[in-house]
Amino acid sequence: MRAVVTGGAGFLGSHLCDRLLERDYEVVCLDNLLTGNTSNIAHLMGHSNFKFIKYNVIDYLFVEGPVDAVLHFASPASPIDYLEMPIQTLKVGSLGTHKALGLAKEKKARFLLASTSEVYGDPLVNPQPETYWGNVNPIGPRGVYDEAKRFAEAITMAYRRYHKMDARIARIFNTYGPRMRPNDGRVVSNFIVQALGGSPLTIYGNGSQTRSFCYVSDLIGGILSLLAAPPSNEMGQPFNIGNPEERTVRDLATKILALAGSSSPVVYQELPVDDPHVRCPDIRRAKSILGWRPEVSIDEGLQLTIDYFRGVAS
Ligand code: UDP
Image (tube, rainbow, N blue to C red):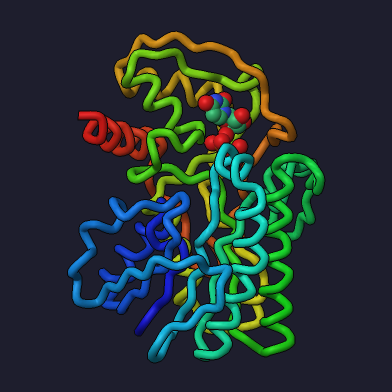
């Protein structure tokens, strides 16, 4: 089996490349290294089944030879990144998804879109089932990511229906783990770097907003289950992939301080515009159809991530 992973040098993309190689896939990894980094795939360079091509997937995509699966993971994915790179974010979600679908169609490959819980915006329903249509502000600063991914879902479904393609959608909820960038800007990496460095943990707003954090190995397990499931009409529905254990940002800060053995104080800063108040995946669909569920506890996952950041810093 041969897979193309766009964004393969990113946080999730690189873990996905690892796991596909473990399953004896040949992997073609495409990344323009805007937020991805070759350090995430350095250990794969020279692997006989792995090929890295520095490429911007908004350009016409040509990959030689047969391809069985296209996994479209390219995109800035941290709020600070898509606020800094709004046009690139819109382009990779729209033009990039179009090109990735075109490649999958040409190769008669299975397509898997890395979509996001951000399609639910600031949800008025909690937890969010896949049937919820969301509450997105299209013209707010986060809209560039949310709407790009909503467009990406729409064009994926159009290709599925019109071209009868085997195209699938994973809605990925907050994920953390090794290979997050120390300056990524997301809450888990920020808090860990701050706790280890002895600087204050920056809680945005009053910290009562909630998120549900999934450890990266669980997340990739869910993606691979979705990729491997036999074709059926059910595969034409999006799948929430995430950990349904919901907690406040304040609680996350307390947990990270304890696990890191840190006595950093916390400081309160302004809440970013349109920051969702709650977020929690309803994963009943993934559980019943894919037989997948997350297994790594928050304490275990955070400890592994803290150990990783300790190693990066030393
Ligand atoms: N957040 C925070 N401090 C930080 C970074 C983020 O309190 O240093 C908050 C942020 O406002 C949001 C939550 O943590 O409510 C998760 O933010 P993140 O950027 O990780 O991802 P999001 O779920 O917003 O995409």
